[in-house]
Length: 509
Image 1 (cartoon, one colour):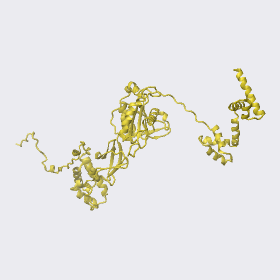
Image 2 (cartoon, one colour; image 1 turned 60 degrees about the vertical axis):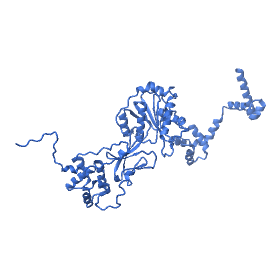
Image 3 (cartoon, helix red, strand yellow; image 1 turned 135 degrees about the vertical axis):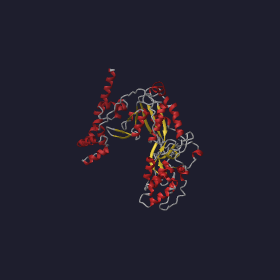
Image 4 (cartoon, rainbow, N blue to C red; image 1 turned 90 degrees about the vertical axis):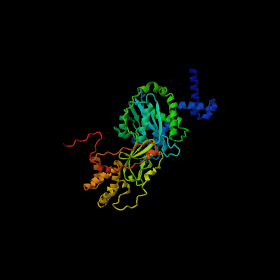
């Protein structure tokens, strides 16, 4: 070993002599000594101690008068690039190039600290992590983006996956309901990204959760936690499956529709993903869930909760309502009314007060008109310009006292348009016959006005708005319409009738 070191030292001394004393280059030294040129270059480098850093330092000496200005720039913004620093130095009289500045920044720029992470462990049934993932326009002929809803148990890594065409509150809540049924219970806490359906506002010290979702979590019995923004490491068990879905499930998929996509996704989830050995635990999620975690999940509380998409809106002049980027029709006489629109995965129902006035199959496209031809019935009979004081076509069911009522209204300063809207609302909620009776009663006291009619209906007669009509899912039966009976005939009957089982009154003796 000592002999080898001695030979190497002698070679290095000879190479240095030829280079420094005789001024020979690497090629000439190689020919004279018989050493390979790479070996000669290596020996010279070792002997000189790699003098390149000195050259770099000498090159950057032109920046010496500007060191304070460079340090100030990096203090203001540690990520500032060399061209931006160069612009500052130019204003101070620097005439060098950007390469020198870039080399200097590479040496003195503060490096970000490497963050250390704890290896966290969770107890069975402790945590569920939830997230959305966007998969773009994947359904043929549908102008809506496909979203994947992902929920994973932190202990077993058991995954729930479903695809939707909306991330709105209603769709989100329905996905949560599906996940609870899939797992068969709830965890202690659910962790979410800062999605707008969960977090309304976030500051450094405060998180304001969406009140409707807080009510849902209370109704099902789980706690809520929101991740720190831009910190996916706080919910890795939902983030990592999304990457796996993108790389192992999604490539080459050509679903015919959303139903087809969910059929494929469910099969892949149950047959492949949940049976893969997890890289962290070394175990199969489906087996860990079945044998350890499932029995420790708490049953979800069975409190009723409304998961419909809800929108309050007005009926347009074309008797349509706008809901989720589509238009749905309602009966034409409800123009101008304020209605509540409810939507689930299958249908859209429209309510005026507590009464359902229209129902349609939900359209999951964009910019479509979904109409019911029956909503136009009677519209063509409306005259384009009715005489002042004439009974509007929308209130034909109130014929009788209504003619006199509107004749009186026309002589006063009340808004006829508003009066019509209010009377249509009352007719829909209470029926034409009670409204006609209340109208006559109000006029008998010397008044006109929808607020008086409502007072009579609601408080004097104690009426409540009628429930939504019963649907039998048979077009022939559901299409039957019966007129309201005229109860005025009962006013002519004797005030007291004899019950067949009641003994006759004894005459006075």
